[in-house]
Amino acid sequence: MPDVILPVLDEAGAIPGVLAGLPVGFTPIVVDNASTDGSGDIARALGARVVLETRRGFGAACHAGLLAATDDVVCFMDCDGSFDGADLVKVAAPVLAGDSDLVMGARRASKGAWPVHARVANRFLAWELRRRTRVTLTDLGPMRAIRRVDLLAIGVEDRRFGWPLEMVLRASLAGLRIDEVDVGYEPRIGRSKVTGTLQGTARAVQDMAKVLR
Image (cartoon, rainbow, N blue to C red; front, side, top):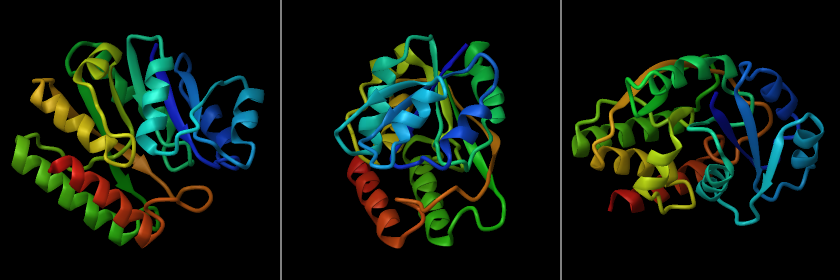
């Protein structure tokens, strides 16, 4: 069953619930991106494998988790309590069955889960991706599944917030079959470092714009 890579930066309040909500057989790899709130220790005490990545950046954490993974299929999910881990089953299923190479979780957000500025930025990036690649995605969300060898082969280079977009762009250029399934999205636990602030969203858009260039 898949490894689940969980990038973590100060998510102590969310970690217990996230780990408890993972489907049976899905193995968590918590990548502690230099947290200061004991996130790594909490995850380790709950039985998760913990990888330390001191280089700050969402992409750096995801890449460290990818290198640590051993299963044929890897999933990615935010560790802030905004996703229902049970949805990983339907995200991973097409990859496990050989029907898709990369499956994205398209967020269907409940009230208050997705700030307007972040939603608008995401829609623009999804539109730009469709325009450039003709991959018909509606969301560039962080819940996704792919074969480990495929992700290593496409060689994602960004180590910041451009990582999710570059992953899809490179997968498309490599001819991988990309699909999308709906997943739930709830208000996160704690304060967001990215979509919860205009500054964080602007930084993420800037990183993704660099990838598009």
